[in-house]
Length: 201
Image: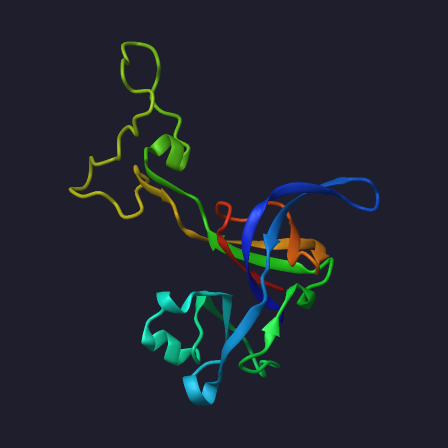
Protein backbone atom coordinates (compact mmCIF):
# COMPACT_ATOMS: atom_id res chain seq x y z
CA UNK A 1 0.00 0.00 0.00
CA UNK A 2 1.30 3.43 -0.98
CA UNK A 3 0.10 6.69 0.61
CA UNK A 4 1.21 10.31 0.81
CA UNK A 5 -0.04 13.88 1.33
CA UNK A 6 0.29 16.68 -1.19
CA UNK A 7 -1.20 19.96 -2.37
CA UNK A 8 -3.06 20.59 -5.60
CA UNK A 9 -1.15 22.95 -7.89
CA UNK A 10 -3.12 23.28 -11.13
CA UNK A 11 -4.31 21.41 -14.20
CA UNK A 12 -2.35 21.11 -17.42
CA UNK A 13 -1.84 18.59 -20.21
CA UNK A 14 0.88 16.15 -21.14
CA UNK A 15 1.55 14.06 -24.23
CA UNK A 16 1.95 10.29 -23.92
CA UNK A 17 4.21 8.05 -26.03
CA UNK A 18 1.69 7.89 -28.86
CA UNK A 19 1.29 11.67 -28.98
CA UNK A 20 -2.15 11.65 -27.35
CA UNK A 21 -3.01 14.58 -25.09
CA UNK A 22 -3.67 13.59 -21.48
CA UNK A 23 -5.31 16.10 -19.10
CA UNK A 24 -3.53 15.95 -15.75
CA UNK A 25 -3.55 17.60 -12.34
CA UNK A 26 -0.17 18.52 -10.87
CA UNK A 27 0.17 17.75 -7.16
CA UNK A 28 3.07 19.14 -5.16
CA UNK A 29 4.30 16.52 -2.69
CA UNK A 30 6.76 17.85 -0.11
CA UNK A 31 8.56 15.27 2.01
CA UNK A 32 6.10 13.59 4.39
CA UNK A 33 7.43 12.73 7.84
CA UNK A 34 6.09 9.69 9.68
CA UNK A 35 5.06 11.21 13.00
CA UNK A 36 3.57 8.06 14.53
CA UNK A 37 2.88 4.43 13.71
CA UNK A 38 -0.28 3.13 15.39
CA UNK A 39 -0.74 -0.57 16.07
CA UNK A 40 -3.60 -2.78 17.21
CA UNK A 41 -1.86 -3.45 20.52
CA UNK A 42 -1.31 0.21 21.44
CA UNK A 43 -4.18 2.01 19.72
CA UNK A 44 -6.72 -0.62 18.74
CA UNK A 45 -6.11 -0.26 15.00
CA UNK A 46 -3.25 -0.02 12.52
CA UNK A 47 -2.42 3.33 10.92
CA UNK A 48 0.46 5.54 9.84
CA UNK A 49 0.35 9.22 10.78
CA UNK A 50 2.05 11.63 8.37
CA UNK A 51 3.03 15.26 8.83
CA UNK A 52 3.54 17.64 5.91
CA UNK A 53 5.25 21.06 5.83
CA UNK A 54 6.88 22.07 9.10
CA UNK A 55 5.13 24.87 10.98
CA UNK A 56 6.81 27.76 12.79
CA UNK A 57 7.43 26.97 16.44
CA UNK A 58 5.88 30.29 17.47
CA UNK A 59 2.53 29.16 16.04
CA UNK A 60 2.44 25.90 17.95
CA UNK A 61 1.17 25.13 21.42
CA UNK A 62 3.28 23.37 24.01
CA UNK A 63 1.01 20.37 23.73
CA UNK A 64 1.66 20.02 20.00
CA UNK A 65 5.40 20.52 20.48
CA UNK A 66 5.38 17.81 23.10
CA UNK A 67 3.46 15.34 20.92
CA UNK A 68 5.71 15.81 17.89
CA UNK A 69 9.01 16.05 19.73
CA UNK A 70 9.61 19.79 19.42
CA UNK A 71 8.28 20.08 15.87
CA UNK A 72 4.95 20.83 14.30
CA UNK A 73 3.35 20.44 10.88
CA UNK A 74 0.81 22.42 8.89
CA UNK A 75 -1.05 19.24 7.99
CA UNK A 76 -1.19 15.97 9.92
CA UNK A 77 -3.32 13.05 8.75
CA UNK A 78 -3.29 9.31 9.20
CA UNK A 79 -3.79 6.42 6.82
CA UNK A 80 -5.39 3.16 7.92
CA UNK A 81 -3.32 0.14 6.95
CA UNK A 82 -3.48 -3.61 7.29
CA UNK A 83 -0.61 -5.57 8.74
CA UNK A 84 2.92 -4.24 9.23
CA UNK A 85 3.47 -0.59 8.34
CA UNK A 86 7.00 -1.09 7.05
CA UNK A 87 7.99 2.36 8.32
CA UNK A 88 8.95 3.85 11.68
CA UNK A 89 8.45 7.23 13.31
CA UNK A 90 10.89 9.74 11.83
CA UNK A 91 11.03 8.13 8.38
CA UNK A 92 10.44 10.31 5.33
CA UNK A 93 8.17 9.52 2.37
CA UNK A 94 8.64 11.21 -1.01
CA UNK A 95 7.17 11.04 -4.52
CA UNK A 96 9.61 8.21 -5.26
CA UNK A 97 7.17 5.92 -3.45
CA UNK A 98 4.95 6.14 -6.56
CA UNK A 99 5.64 4.99 -10.10
CA UNK A 100 4.27 5.93 -13.48
CA UNK A 101 1.16 3.89 -14.18
CA UNK A 102 0.04 3.46 -10.55
CA UNK A 103 -3.73 3.54 -10.08
CA UNK A 104 -4.59 5.84 -7.18
CA UNK A 105 -7.52 7.15 -5.17
CA UNK A 106 -7.42 10.88 -4.47
CA UNK A 107 -9.29 12.54 -1.60
CA UNK A 108 -9.68 16.27 -1.10
CA UNK A 109 -12.12 18.98 -0.01
CA UNK A 110 -14.24 20.26 -2.90
CA UNK A 111 -14.70 23.95 -3.62
CA UNK A 112 -17.28 25.65 -1.41
CA UNK A 113 -20.07 27.41 -3.29
CA UNK A 114 -22.07 28.79 -0.38
CA UNK A 115 -25.86 28.70 -0.21
CA UNK A 116 -27.23 27.74 -3.63
CA UNK A 117 -30.64 27.15 -5.15
CA UNK A 118 -31.97 23.89 -6.51
CA UNK A 119 -30.97 24.62 -10.13
CA UNK A 120 -27.28 24.93 -9.35
CA UNK A 121 -27.25 22.48 -6.45
CA UNK A 122 -29.29 19.62 -7.95
CA UNK A 123 -29.72 20.48 -11.62
CA UNK A 124 -33.47 21.25 -11.48
CA UNK A 125 -34.93 22.63 -14.71
CA UNK A 126 -37.12 25.25 -13.06
CA UNK A 127 -40.70 26.13 -13.94
CA UNK A 128 -42.31 26.92 -17.30
CA UNK A 129 -41.58 30.27 -18.94
CA UNK A 130 -45.01 30.75 -20.49
CA UNK A 131 -48.77 30.58 -19.79
CA UNK A 132 -48.80 33.21 -17.10
CA UNK A 133 -45.76 31.98 -15.20
CA UNK A 134 -43.89 35.12 -14.31
CA UNK A 135 -41.18 34.37 -11.75
CA UNK A 136 -40.81 30.57 -11.74
CA UNK A 137 -37.66 30.14 -13.81
CA UNK A 138 -35.50 28.83 -10.96
CA UNK A 139 -38.08 27.80 -8.35
CA UNK A 140 -38.12 24.26 -6.90
CA UNK A 141 -41.84 23.64 -7.44
CA UNK A 142 -44.00 21.37 -5.28
CA UNK A 143 -42.44 19.17 -2.62
CA UNK A 144 -45.38 16.76 -2.60
CA UNK A 145 -46.94 17.64 0.74
CA UNK A 146 -50.46 16.44 -0.07
CA UNK A 147 -50.48 13.25 2.02
CA UNK A 148 -48.25 14.20 4.92
CA UNK A 149 -47.64 17.03 7.34
CA UNK A 150 -43.88 17.06 7.12
CA UNK A 151 -41.04 17.34 4.64
CA UNK A 152 -39.66 13.87 3.76
CA UNK A 153 -36.06 13.19 4.67
CA UNK A 154 -33.67 13.58 1.75
CA UNK A 155 -35.89 16.06 -0.11
CA UNK A 156 -33.67 17.98 -2.52
CA UNK A 157 -33.82 21.66 -1.68
CA UNK A 158 -31.66 24.75 -1.68
CA UNK A 159 -28.78 24.75 0.78
CA UNK A 160 -25.05 24.82 1.35
CA UNK A 161 -23.14 23.43 -1.59
CA UNK A 162 -19.58 22.18 -1.88
CA UNK A 163 -16.87 22.11 0.79
CA UNK A 164 -17.34 18.34 1.08
CA UNK A 165 -14.79 15.56 1.34
CA UNK A 166 -14.69 13.98 -2.12
CA UNK A 167 -12.82 10.87 -3.22
CA UNK A 168 -12.06 10.15 -6.88
CA UNK A 169 -11.00 6.58 -7.59
CA UNK A 170 -9.27 4.96 -10.53
CA UNK A 171 -6.96 7.83 -11.50
CA UNK A 172 -3.57 7.06 -13.01
CA UNK A 173 -0.15 8.49 -12.18
CA UNK A 174 1.00 9.85 -15.55
CA UNK A 175 4.40 11.20 -14.46
CA UNK A 176 6.63 11.40 -11.38
CA UNK A 177 9.06 14.33 -11.10
CA UNK A 178 11.43 13.59 -8.21
CA UNK A 179 13.40 16.83 -8.70
CA UNK A 180 10.35 19.09 -8.48
CA UNK A 181 8.56 16.80 -5.98
CA UNK A 182 5.40 16.66 -8.08
CA UNK A 183 3.02 14.00 -9.31
CA UNK A 184 1.00 14.33 -12.52
CA UNK A 185 -2.32 12.54 -12.01
CA UNK A 186 -4.74 11.96 -14.88
CA UNK A 187 -8.00 13.88 -14.81
CA UNK A 188 -9.33 16.31 -12.23
CA UNK A 189 -9.02 16.05 -8.46
CA UNK A 190 -11.24 17.80 -5.89
CA UNK A 191 -10.61 21.27 -4.54
CA UNK A 192 -9.04 24.59 -5.42
CA UNK A 193 -5.36 25.35 -5.85
CA UNK A 194 -3.59 24.63 -2.57
CA UNK A 195 -6.08 22.02 -1.36
CA UNK A 196 -4.50 19.24 0.70
CA UNK A 197 -4.73 15.97 -1.23
CA UNK A 198 -4.58 12.41 0.11
CA UNK A 199 -3.16 9.96 -2.43
CA UNK A 200 -3.51 6.21 -1.89
CA UNK A 201 -2.44 3.44 -4.26
